[in-house]
Amino acid sequence: MLRLEATRQILDQAGQRPIVANLGPTSDELWHAGHRDRNFYTYGSMGLCSSIALGMALSTQERVISLDGDGSLLMNLGTIATIGRERPKNLIVVVWDNEQWAQTGHQSSHTAYGTKLDQVARSCGIEKTALVDDLEELKSVFGRALEEDGPWFIVAKIQEAEYLPVAPVEPEFTLYRFRESFKS
Image (cartoon, rainbow, N blue to C red; front, side):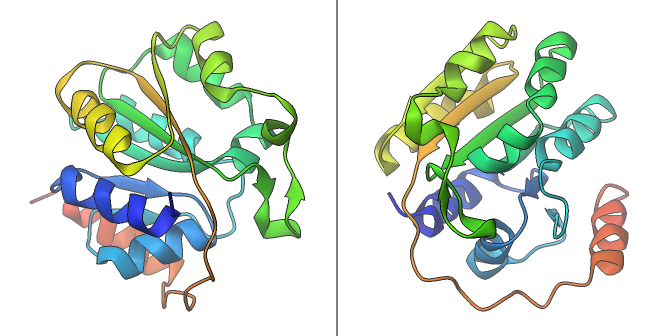
């Protein structure tokens, strides 16, 4: 499945729930799929997307969605252990697993050599995990995650397409806009 198609699927199902997007193409594709005040783009924060989403989930009752990447999570595996320790019921982590560090030159990541992030999450105490390969599976599992307490950890095997133009995002304004969206 293509990440852009999967991102559109998630955005359709998410409603007005806050979404934190991993750096680079993940943020760009979320912006192009549907820019909104409840999107938080983490440009320049490789390895921190799910950590940021965890902090948000611990400070609100709203369900928070993290759109992370396999390479970013591999750079900060402590995030998975901390999510397992804290067990926020309102956190959904979706991992776009393209089996590479695309942002640094398309080198194969550990998931290309057998590391299974859903099993890592389960071993860290996250009971609700899933591995999906297509849009129908993603729609079904993500729908369950929106209805059932979590935390949820969904690994979605994706393929890369040509990168979209870089979204015209200003980090300071992203933070301001996102914070303000919690006031209304």
